[in-house]
Image (tube, rainbow, N blue to C red; front, side, top):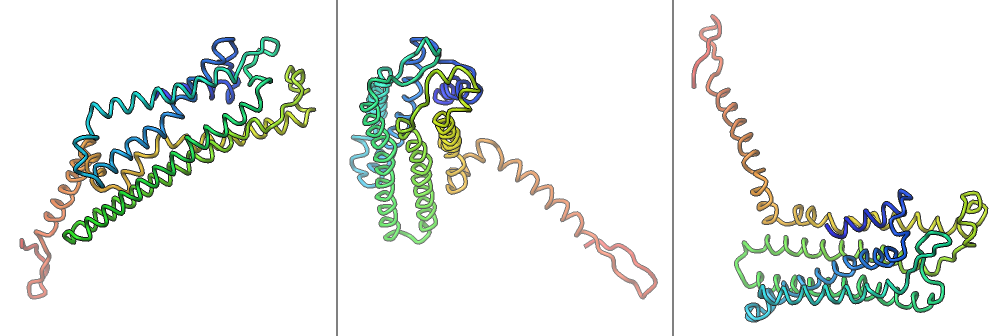
Length: 290
């Protein structure tokens, strides 16, 4: 929820609707820091929960030691602090230019910004998702190993878990990696002359600015698609997870509604089959109850 609020206030209003929300000296740096914190934190939390599931499945005897509520709170606090620490660097990479009344990256540290952005994007949005995929594959192997030595009825549950874990892992990578790529190459996109930003006519006559804004448009499309990462896990779990689907249906009382309609249909069908038309010596038809 915090990520969606910051995304709407900072990104959508500023870049999509041209309503500046970061055109203040302190607000420029602050919003850039706040917008990147949930982006760093989300993959780390997924990794933390994946490792916890890996311990519970592959090392069940260590579950009571490592998979506790207290330890989970400590891990979440540490991951949050790590994300905030990395995000605070953004405050030194961005600044407000009062001449243009805009928030831009600083001119003097382009090399450092390029190296820093590439490093953090690779670490958070490539290495972490690959680690999630690796742990999920290990969990899948362990589930298959256990079910292969167990009763045959567990094979369906094993297949469902495999599909769910693989779907989540690959969707996680496919929605993080493209967004990180288009974000990482922003420093490689040259800016036009700053004085041409003062009017639309000057921007239209500046090919460098035109190519830059074309990149911004493509980047926004990719980011909007990849933003589904925050919303579509529910549908993946609902489609691929039988137990999850049953719990959701029970919580939303969908089963009761379906059962009610099913009972009505069966009652009507029974009422219809109670009577049939039979012939008596060709002299007509009369209804006979069965």
